[in-house]
Image 1 (cartoon, helix red, strand yellow):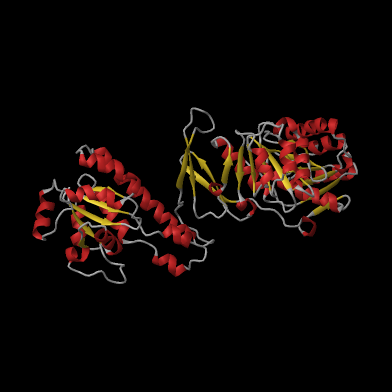
Image 2 (cartoon, rainbow, N blue to C red):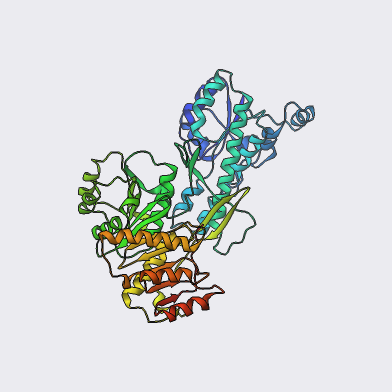
Length: 515
C-alpha cells in the first residue's frame, strides 16, 4: 500500500497499526488533531490541505470534502476512463483509509448537552470519506474499527488480505454509519415525530449462548439512548445470562417498578406467577413466594427496594434463576455469594418509570406501539362505573394492585388478589372462562395453606367479560368483588347478573391486553 487517508477521533492503537506500513513507504494524508498526533508520535504525515490546495475552513467543518480526496477514494483502477481522469486532474489513488467518527454518542448521552452541542458533534466528512472508500472496497482497504487493526495489519503485511476481507470491512462501515445516523435521528427527534422510517440505534452488547432453545442463535443488542437500560445493570454474580433470563428479567423489573410501596414480583416464562406488596421488602417477598411456591421454583424475582439479609435467608432454600433489585446490603450479598450459580443483578435504574415504545417482530417487519399505562388513581377517575357497593379503601388498593399484575399476564388474563397479594392467576388461555378456572384452581391450592376471607378477594380481568358465565364462576366460589374494563355488547347482561346476585363490580373503561 502506497497512500493512506487517516482521520480518527478514537486514536486507540493507531500508531502501532500504521508504523510498519510507514516503514515500508506508506504516505499518510491526515487532518487536524490526527495529524498532530501522528507527527508527535514520530510518524511522517501530510496535511490534507496540501492535497486539496485549500485550507481547513469553517472551524474544521470542511477538511476532506474535496474532489482531490474523493476522486482518490472512488476511482476504479480497472476502468481506463477513471485512470485517465485521475491523470488529467493530477489526483492520486488512495490504497488505505483509516477513520472513525466524532463521538456524537458521548455527547448524546450527556444529559446536560445542549441541542447546539449535539449538532456540532455530528460528523459529516468522516461518514463521507468512509462510505466513499467502502463503496470502492475492491481498490481501497477501509478500517473503521480499532478492533480490526491487528488482523488487517497481519494480512496486509503478509499479502493475504482477500476480497472477502475487504468486503467485510466495507460492510462494517455501512453498519457504523447507519447506526450513527439512527443515533442522531433518535436523539434530535421529538416525541411527536411521525417519520416514515424506523431508525433504531442498536449496538451489540454480546452474543448469547443460544435463544429460546439450544438450536437457536441469539444476540443481545442495546439502545444507548434509553435511560432505563437493562444493559446497564451490574451483574454481581452467577452464570451467564440467557435469552430467556433476559426476557423474564425485563418483564419482572418493568412490573415491580410500577409500585411505590415495597414490592416483589416473581416471573416464570414471561408471566408473573406471584406478586405482593407489604410494609417492607421481606414481607413482600414472603407473600410473593407463598402465593404460588410451586410455580416460583426456577423463576426470577424482582424487587423495588434494597434487598436485606432477612430476605436472602428466607429465599436461600429455594431454587431461583435470577434476582434483580436496585441494591443489596453487604450482608445480603455475602449470603448470596454462597450460591455461585444464582444470577444476581443490581440495577438502580430499575426504579425509573418512563413512557417508552414497545417493538414486536413479525414476518417481514416490526410492529410499534406505546407502552401500556394505568390510571394514577382509579378512586378519583370519572370514567369508573360502580355496580353495587362502593369499594372500601383496601378493595380499591387491591384493584390498583391487581390491574397492574393482570396487565403483565398473557391474555386472556385473570388475577385474584387479596390484601396486596396474588392468590390465584390464570393466563394465556384461548377463552376467558378457562383463565377463570385456572385462577380459581390456583386459589384453592393457596387456601389450603393460607386461609383467607373470600369476601375480600378481588377478581381482575384484563378485558371485558363477553358473557356472564365467568362472573357466575366467581359467584359460585363466593367472590363478591370484580374489576374489569367493560366494553362488551353483553355488559348489561353481566351487570344484571351482578345486581341479581348482590355482587359488586367496577368498570374502568381501560383494557390491558398483552399478547
